[in-house]
Image (tube, rainbow, N blue to C red; front, side, top):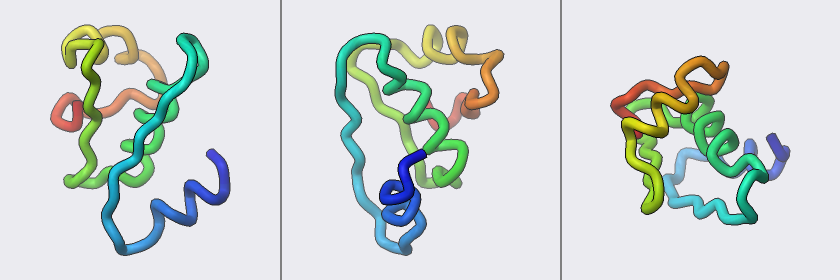
Length: 71
């Protein structure tokens, strides 16, 4: 994870983060890793293109799999 992102997410301030890019560049994996690392009970992953159930099924076995409650 980029150091500037870790520094920003480690602060006590809350904010939104928009991740965008071409298909297959790792946006979802980055988002799930961020949730796992910094999400606690306030982190939420939102997607307009993928349902929570299909996202959970696709990434369930990965090390970055996030609890269903944050999707």
